[in-house]
Length: 468
Image (cartoon, rainbow, N blue to C red; front, side, top):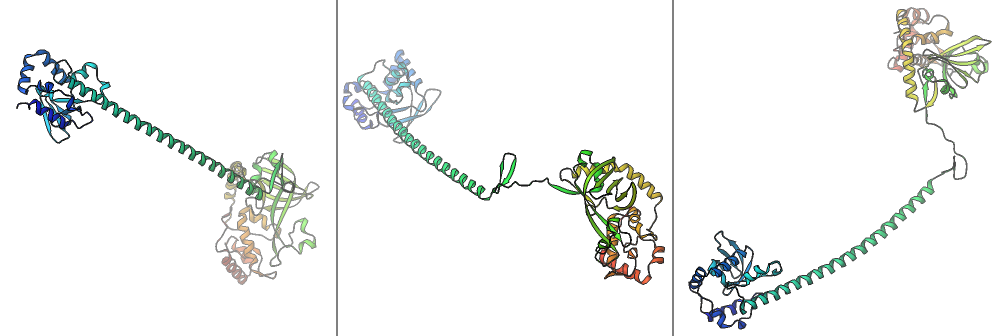
């Protein structure tokens, strides 16, 4: 394929240079275009002129994928492929695609926007399209136009960068204003919430601390106390002497029967008020103020009370209310040491569990010995005997307090307006009283009525006692 005539090249260059690298064709002398040879003749020149061939080959080596070139006929294009043999494929924006060998590269004018990244020799080689070693006027004009266009592109980028910087600076200023406004709003809201909280607290707070004194808003001193609970008397021996000294009161419950009143209730004015009048047995509750506490052994404690000659003795798991005059025991009655409803002391809630555990541990040895003795002498039933003053104490030797409470309440159910058909232990819903005693002391009809009434009330037997 032969190259077009020089005049035709001028015409094609004039029509094709429409990119940012367009070079005015009228400044390219016709004599310069005329010097361009046909491809075949140019190939012969490359084969015969070593210097031109080397310069052309160096120019080809500097061309890589992605470089852009301008062709007189096809316009601008981009290198899409370069083979190992040196063939270069260009995709033109006009849609044409061409492959160029060494002898055809002279028709490609470089489009360079980053000329500052090229070395002088590389840039000269790229612009020297005919590889003559000289830059003619047409090549120089193209180089000049390329520099101007590159500068224009650079200037345009700088302007865009300045505009973007200005936009970001403006956005940053707007954001700072927004953040300051938000901060002020948050501070105002927090101040309002703090003020509201302070107002609410001030409105509902009815106490204040003035040094070590806690007082109400009128200046009256407030009373404080420890959180406390009731603890069975059986746990009292677990306390040390210092803790026993802090016990201020003891509550006890007594079961008393007609004719067996304790000395402090024998006065007629007291005796006729005892009980509810429905039975000859009554439950009496009593609260003692403790004046002195004496630790007799690891399992025994004596509480002397403000009532003359009256004391509460807890020994080996058994509690008694005793009356002593002139060193002699005048009267005693057993208490329910393990039942908080019958006899108790008030302790700090934090120490209750610790005291109960310690008391149980200290009683284990003695309780085991007592249980062995009780098992050896155990009887299958309770025989009240004839002395009513000993009934309660004897019963508590064999059965627990809950059982006694059930027996007493069941017995009261058999009495109407103080008239009872039988004595207390005839109402034997749990069948803990010996049959021979009931046969001798309880009329058959009364026993049946009493047992059925008590059984209906109890609905079960709380007598899982010591002797059964």
